[in-house]
Image 1 (cartoon, rainbow, N blue to C red):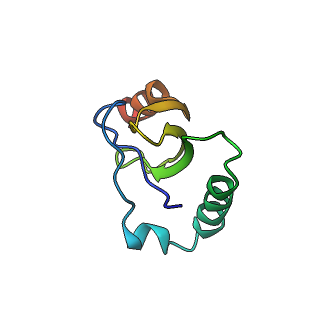
Image 2: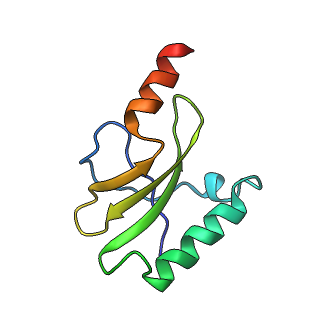
Amino acid sequence: MEIRPVNTASVNAPVHAATPSFENDQSVRPLVTAVREVNKSELLGQGRELSFRRDPATKQPVIAIVDSASGDVIDQIPPESVLQLAQQLK
């Protein structure tokens, strides 16, 4: 199963494929591998996927549970409000 980052413009925006350079980043490779394994196991239930991305504004890692059919974010760590606060504090 493919790991797809969540679009930060809108929580309900469709999920797009990750860029190859991001997946080849050595610092996140173990996390990307773990996310793929969780998605293969369907541990989160049918129709749900774990997603990993790096927030473009804060450069912080973001983990989300995404509805694979609609692309809607069900839950995410850190929440969007925390990412926005971190951006404002820069």
